[in-house]
Length: 225
Image (cartoon, rainbow, N blue to C red):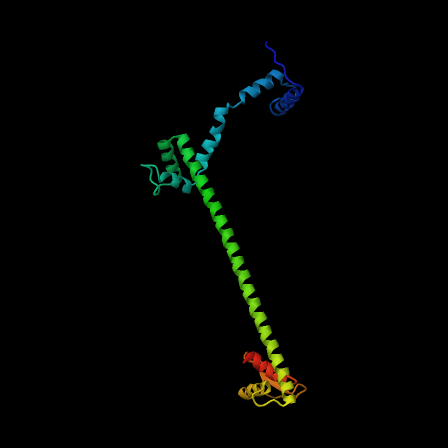
């Protein structure tokens, strides 16, 4: 009988396979020889040119109706609707053959993968655009808030300037006159409250705010009206 030479690692692997075969196929008093292990490996060997066959047949067997319909669209004589999944699978297989049928199914799968990737990129782009728009809106709101704050500061400064003008005896055209005119123009929006904070001012939102001085009244009127 011809002999073959194996390395120590190969011998260890053969011994492992031998033990597995004995556990799976041999009863208590049986034994698997090394030649039996070699024969088992030869019997279960799959040539390289046949290794893709299983995947090919599995692709055909597991294709869903949508994938079959996509293939049938370009195959003359095979209806893309009006028949069930298995009938369509059988007609495509008989018309195209195994290799061609599997190849077209692979193209359909690749196309669906590409479409899904493009959709993901589009969604990511939309999310970035929405974030940019939200950031811009926040910036606009911040600017509006800053402008309103500047207006309040100007109103307070105007009120303080009005008092100083009165002390210096400015004429009717002074800032104080303008501030007093604001009180007259909106006399229906404020009144004496008679409490610890003696003045009440009606705000546009329907609420009433109490303040201590007429300067405070002027500030609220200037801010809201």
